[in-house]
Amino acid sequence: MKIETTKIEATKIEIMRIERLPVLQDNYIFLLHDPDQQTAAVVDPALAEPVLERLQALGAELTAILITHHHGDHVGGNQALLERFPEAVVYGSEADRGRIPGQQVFLNEGDRVTFAGRTAEVLFVPGHTRGHIAYYFAPSHNAGEGEMGELFCGDTLFSAGCGRLFEGTPAQMVRSLSKIRSLPDQTRVWCAHEYTEKNLQFALTVEPQNTVLQQQYALVKTLRQRLESTIPAELTLEKQINPFLRWDLPSLMATTQTQDPTENFARLRAMKDRF
Image (cartoon, helix red, strand yellow):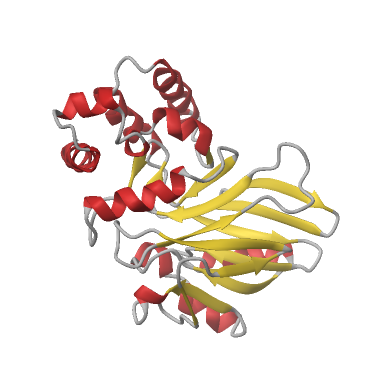
């Protein structure tokens, strides 16, 4: 199993390591590890086995399961993880009550979840599903220069893309993406799928003259040829290349022939659905 690790250090007592566990065809599970306490939290465990294998290798105890939404490729490992770690707490959206296996905590906008001395604010971001939430860890109080915030956004935002509207409306998704767009530029986006190359191909069809987009596509093609991950993405870059964070850009509205930003988003999403 391929494991990709990024280490984030704030102070000697506030350390959170984030590991990517690639699973299924294109999913990512994210494992948060506190090496001081030897505890771990997992975000959207599609499968239990790779998480259990990594926890054993780390010698860490699973204390929390953070779910963004109810889809099977985000919750499929919950029950098996709880069988091994029955004290672990399953967090999810209040609006997903009854749809997340083992859920014990029901979260709403503005609620907070703490792990490894870091506190995540819950953002209610429906659109892909009616109950979707995201977890935003702001930089720690004692953050060093250049420390990033960390956003676990499930299937709401992808690098250069966004989730399909299975249960929500374009207006809901625009409001949800507005919340994400308003986060600090120094935020890393940990989305749950490796869709970046295809998303960039679409983005170039609606912004062919965007030189930053062209450069990012060339970089991502190289990364994917080497089977390297494109996640996390940085929000500051996403604001320059992701058409679904640029729905109110006049040039994009001209492309879709509308003067209404929300309608522009809806038309872009429909175009992507057919792409």
